[in-house]
Image 1: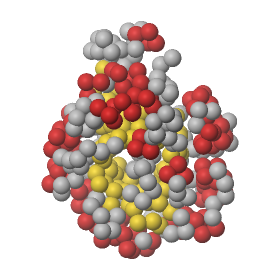
Image 2 (image 1 turned 60 degrees about the vertical axis):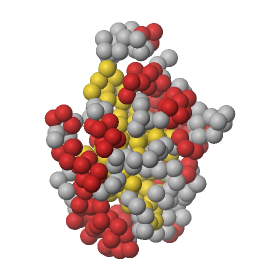
Image 3 (image 1 turned 30 degrees about the horizontal axis):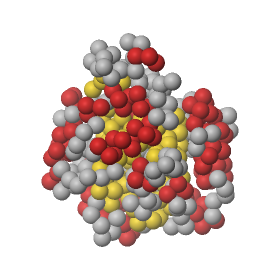
Image 4 (image 1 turned 120 degrees about the vertical axis):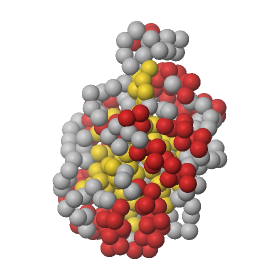
Length: 341
């Protein structure tokens, strides 16, 4: 059976320092052996100079994919089965993210963070009464429900809720909301109405995103907005055809948020492999000489919080093409191994 580990084997020459330590690659392989190879994966890499963990996300687009993983991960089984059976049909796809720094040797993979992608114009009542309770495994707290509705009500017409995340795998009852359609100035205006204490930290990094497209704003909600804000962005084309990627990375380097070595490695990630480019590593028993393994620079993200150094990340997608472009622009399922960063 084709697994994500087969694709990591194809990618082996690129899973090297400074983005990937040998220990990180081994942990990725152990997890990927139990994940299906038909799904696109994303590697979440930290860009600061020091070594850092790498997380792995998997995107599910079909009912068979969800059914196949439901029994393996009991913490999200109920949600995956409801989505696979059509009870949460407006949710367009589901992401599972595995924080590998939470992995315990001999105890199997960590419980995944789960995320659902929503269509534009999602009904707030359906969101708080149906899909979020399914995602959380129980009803929302009354204060949390009110806070989420207030966040949605404050959105300008140009913006919409794109992703929702449950952070219970990280020991938090918070829901992460990810908003699409806000330019940096509009992000600051939106936060002034909801979490004014976060505006200075966000304003400090918002200039990094000048001229960047496909911007997302993410934050965590309990009965209030928690002090962690993420901003991410990307471009429709890959770096070989879009010089603004290089300028984007350079701003991160100048701010001390990205090492030059990691910048160069991330910019060199995009491309593809086939049996003909990687015959000794290709899953010939599963695929024969057919198929392609894509490598896509999905997006860059900066996470900020008061009185803390911002953290920059790159999201490197890999795996088979699926006939959609969602994997090129999709967000990762959350940003870190605890809900506060």
